[in-house]
Image (cartoon, rainbow, N blue to C red):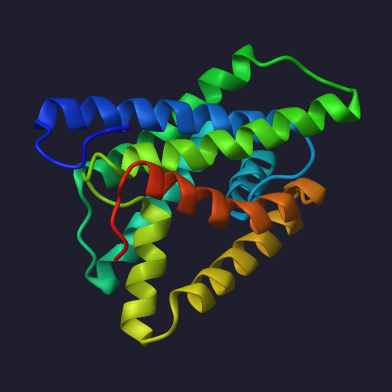
Length: 200
């Protein structure tokens, strides 16, 4: 378990980049399993299908669009925010080149579940660097603050919208999407607790 304080900037940068590297693996596993993916990834996949861009590059495009939405919300990005926006998609593309194609259902399901757990662990790890929130988290928190609405309501609205638009563009929505939606919150909570990240 990582100490909560007294870490130098270089150490925090290493933690950030490694966390995002592992996060990219988690995302790649869920995509490669072909059982449905997280709402924002469905949106990126839809863009990938419609434009011919790779999944990772499409993820970077989505992150860039989200960061533009930070401007009217007056949310300030950190180093970690920019790194998150750029690196997760690129790391996901890297891992997708290495992962095998699976056709047996139980193997696909196992790959997906491992991916979800890795995403949760990596979230706690990169947040523990304390170098800024991810683009989507900042967007949802900024919107919740601006509208004076509960975070869960804003998150549900955003994720429902991107899921629908992504699905209409050809993104994959299956049982994995539901599994991710139902489990990721609890798993991330455990990860944050493990890395001793205080609640807001």
